[in-house]
Image 1 (cartoon, rainbow, N blue to C red):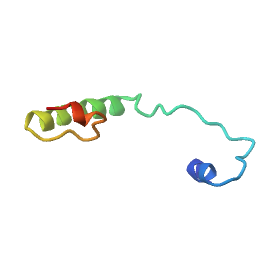
Image 2 (cartoon, rainbow, N blue to C red):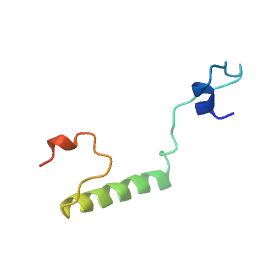
Image 3 (cartoon, one colour):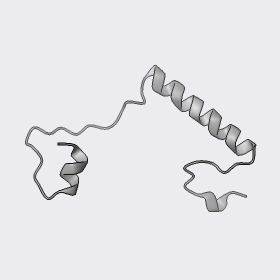
Length: 61
């Protein structure tokens, strides 16, 4: 059963459930992807488009 489904239902998780922090980004591929996405986002902003996933867009001019 997916963890999100356990969270949405009123059931007890299995006693052997272990939840760990998400660390998939910490790899060569993950670091390259972060740099690539950051560069693409910067290109987007410099070309006059609004950024994706901006949490404080009201402060942009």
